[in-house]
Amino acid sequence: MPAFDLPLEELERYRPLPDEPADFDAFWHGTLQEAAAAEVLVEARPVATGLRLTETWDVSFRGFAGDPVRAWFSRPAGVPGPLPAVVEYAGYGRGRGLPHERLTWVNAGYAHLLMDNRGQGDQYGSGGATPDPHAKSPGGPGPAVRGIGDPRDYHYRRLITDAVRAVAAVRALPGVDASRVAAVGNSQGGGLALAVAGLLPDLAAVLVSAPFLCGIRRALDLTDAPPYGEITAYLSVHRGVEAAAHRTLAYVEGVSFARRAHAPAHFGVGLRDTVCPPSGAYAAFHRYGELSDADPLKEIRAYPYNGHEGGDAVHVRRQLDWLAQVLPVSPRPA
Image (cartoon, rainbow, N blue to C red; front, top):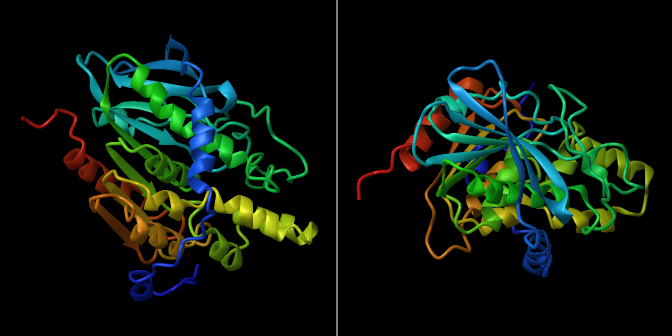
């Protein structure tokens, strides 16, 4: 695929003004306050996986509106003591799958929680197990347009709330150092991880690659690939609702979450990404932490000839090396 977004030298200076509603903070404070009213953990049940070096639990925790959200929680087998944890968020259309599918962070020595995506899991992968009982019509068949006419009804209000509650869930599980939790995700998962970083002031680290929901207005003009293409297709049929849709999307804009973040951050982006255009990632990166009292540690890795897969396994190795420095499995001596 050809490069289609801004050239790298412009991306490295790209810092657009935030598209942010005046009540952005109040909206999310109220949403999260409602969700926090219920105790987070419902169940953590050990499961047999056929893996001898990893222990896994089937977890259910309360997310948006107290709805049960499923997750896999895994730890290195036989490793005593509280471990730092990685909360991972899956991509668009994917569910949590099977417990043996995502072992990178466990093999690196971290406790690992993989959150299921409510109302997703049917597009690829090995499925999901969390329904979305609040999905509203009209809004189209895909999650990106469910409830898009009103920010309180929008799918991503619920999914972002689940993502924040997933951090509370992992902190409540045994064998986790609750003070040392990182959020990780690619694509939709990257957008969720970035939202969590902006909504939780005490996150230890965030790793974001090819993030969805960043620079949304520009992305809608640049690409017809889903998920953004689902939104433009919806607007092409429902003419006249653009203002309401843009207002809703402004409440889930990743650049706004990035501005409020404090945690050290590692970004990755493919410059030929036609799914999540790289200008969105750069906008979030350059604005990251600007409302914080101190400039957080941050870096971005660009892959000029890669698309939505970014640096793939090469980038994962860079993530592992970076997190080992920022959030070592064994705490640094005092």
